Length: 195
Ligand code: 5GP
Figure (cartoon, rainbow, N blue to C red):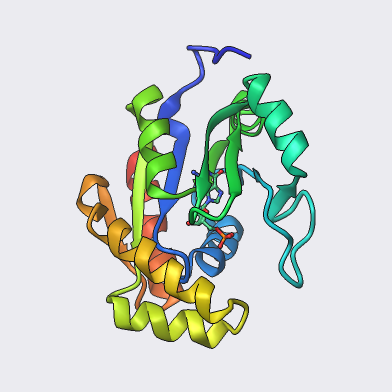
């Protein structure tokens, strides 16, 4: 599927930040209170759902075979293996174009490499990095959420330190002191851009 050039990439909003930086809470709150009509692009992944996650809401949970088939068919705007353990994540072109075609702004919650891949294709996209404050704070949050094994926490922290090092490549950086404050900063960014 090709991208219709009349659709404005300035309405693609990318939110990245290390796993555990609080993206999920911020995204949920932002979708409720955004100053622009914002829709979440639901990514596809081969990882298993965590408890409370629903297929089609947090992710489209796909088998490896189905993910590979869609990848070969060119259905992803970007996709990659995250955490080096064989789990794939990808942004579906259809998720982005359908929102833009309806006049919405589309929010992509993706990692740094995915963000750079999207930026290469759509330099006008709005890039926001959600910063956890520090690695120590991130570790505290990852342990606190109690959903990840020790091994997974260690790998996430390793990936996180690499991601924090690339925060400066984002046009906007928001430190997540509290979800309410982070959401309010992001709302202000979107209001400014849309105005
Ligand atoms: P989690 O397994 O905690 O839901 O997500 C792990 C990481 O994958 C997060 O950093 C998240 O931003 C990233 N991620 C989620 N969806 C996508 C996607 O479609 N593309 C890329 N490149 N990364 C993604």
